[in-house]
Length: 221
Ligand SMILES: O=C(O)CCC(=O)C(=O)O
Image (cartoon, rainbow, N blue to C red; front, top):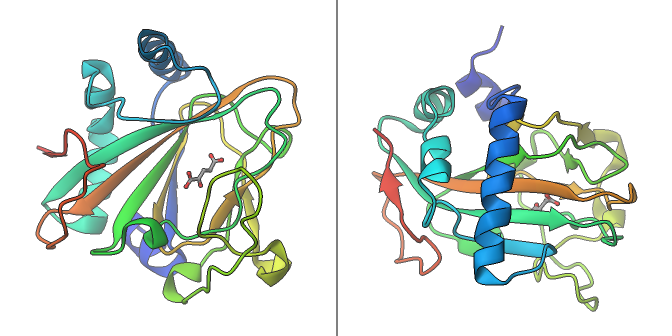
């Protein structure tokens, strides 16, 4: 069986099933809801900086199985940069468009960890990926005339449908992926909320600009 590092290098992603138990995922979601309430933010769109203000999130960001996989892939110096909650509430009828996260930050290559805080499938917005696309360059020339964010995106028509892999996930599952891996998500048509957390990590030995968004960055032990 391929190691996490081999899988990551060949395919651009690796899935950690059951990284958190359902109870742990529920606790993270409840904590996130409390943080949002404190900030008077409603549950739609994105919210950055959970770990910056929550010991529970900080502990989750360095949970041993995740730290082990990240160190195997990145090396011994793994830096947590920031995290964000991605809500798809019951009225979110658009999916996230195809994109590579690298467009948003440049510099050294980073890893995103997409964590399901609700069960996610095609009906409520699970992640969709293009395995191997981390080794290719993509031109983000998609139409951005809607109000859905994602200033860098590709048109669905420019994606080879035969290569798409859907990634249904149970709450607590995590998908670790390279910042050049093309990914998107389905719209939420389920009538219920779908919450996910995305955390970003980097190799601490690699130079980078000062990122204003890398709140509460820390090196994993
Ligand atoms: O959970 C999702 O809908 C995907 C969001 C996403 O890909 C991103 O924010 O980079």
